[in-house]
Length: 122
Image (cartoon, rainbow, N blue to C red; front, side, top):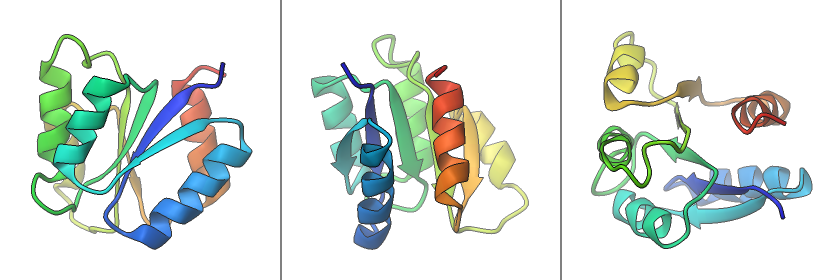
């Protein structure tokens, strides 16, 4: 059974590109476009890994990550934050939210795939 990745980004183009790449690599991909949708879909179908954009409508990625990491049912799920923001305090804020890693956009598909495989121990 393939590993499930929850992909969350409010940019449809990013979702399509990353979804296609992950699916070609053999993963089952579930998508979300808002922070609230991430929390709902995570509770309904515990993914093996979450790729989470920081800037999203409503609840941002930091808050979503913090909520996931505070919940006993979801705290074990690796969360990789990704963003186009270029701020120096980004890493500190990401770590404070409980993120396992942060990736800057734009990123190479192969780089993302290697990170995913590392966290899923494949």
